Length: 80
Image 1: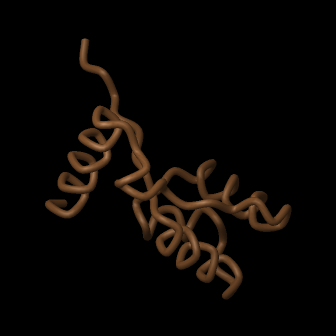
Image 2 (image 1 turned 90 degrees about the vertical axis):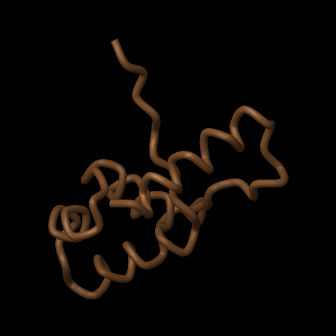
């Protein structure tokens, strides 16, 4: 059994996704075009409405283990 690694998105990515939705694209279409999960994008829309949208932690604020995971996820995302 393989452990699934959760994707982490920075604030700029989230804001770009929200711009697509605000520009008239449906949440489902925007999520598909960005390769994100529809529910995740819905959560970002909701967080933005509540003024609670946050991005990924800065790398220097993370624990070593968390930093390694974030870097490996980011590397894999760039390869795709």
